[in-house]
Length: 424
Image (tube, rainbow, N blue to C red; front, side):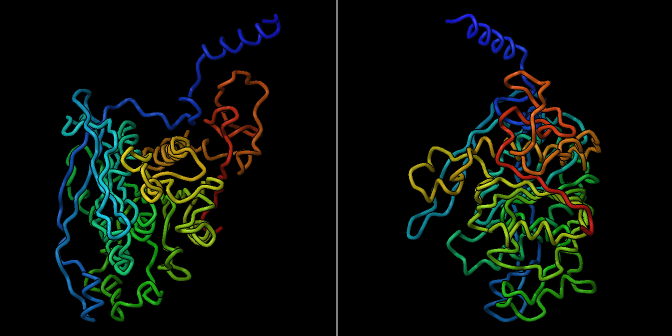
């Protein structure tokens, strides 16, 4: 080896020995926090809820009790053995649902750490399972959040004729869970004065509606229901306020539905969202689109301080865990989990970086997190790297004319980050 190459190699080794502030190519806030993760499940019953399929069939309002299962991740004391998650997903007819397992770092029944934590309510995608959102639940629990994921009991993925059920039940489920948390469902571990909502796909539609986006009965999505069926949820109606999650501090919508493939809010419905909003989307999403789709939600939520994170060429499956071994045998199964272009670990790490900054800012009042959204250029590819930082795996410190704060050198690529203030 020549002297010059030897010197370069030595410098590289010393630089690596100096260490980095991120794990691999993940931006720095993606790493888990210091807490251990506990897991418990709860069952609640929402009584006398509208049954939309019966309403369609009988042409009048019919109600029934609705049971909901909740998965709760929380900061816990160390100790105990984690066990894997088990769930199933719909297969193309006439095949039966496919079962799978996902790895876990959570210990069921672990003793809470004794602190009082902000709460994040999570709503999964259509016909998904809450275990598929464990990448959010576990990571946020290590950082001092109690995360409550709702099992919404959707119809099967191929039962599109029953889509009216989640259109109504999603915001009702989310609002009811928020109410139960404020009534003490989680005990001392939760601070019910600090609640945020996160939803993926159909869950994104749900959290936006529960946070104030107003449903429009004139939209074709609701055309099969009896006329004026939404009146019961309007001011003066018998279920006034039941669609509202109340005073929430922040919303995160990942690949949200609601504009496409179905429209629900009408022309001005999104103006009802007035809390800080983070939208995460791929601009090649073939399920909910992009424009029309999440880009229009970003534009039309005029009364919210809102941020849009875009994965260039990213598709719809950006909001769930990596594909488990049992789901690799067919493209149908794999496409529930994996993106055709983006590495899943890259997608989840980037999303967790911004989700952490957003929630710390709005639920914990950590003003230092604002710097992660103050980018020198909205396109990450066009953000320059500081010449003063020479380490191979250096992490950007942010600031004017530098790469996005927290990203590793040469790995702040393929992203767009845009922000609009209220009334913009």
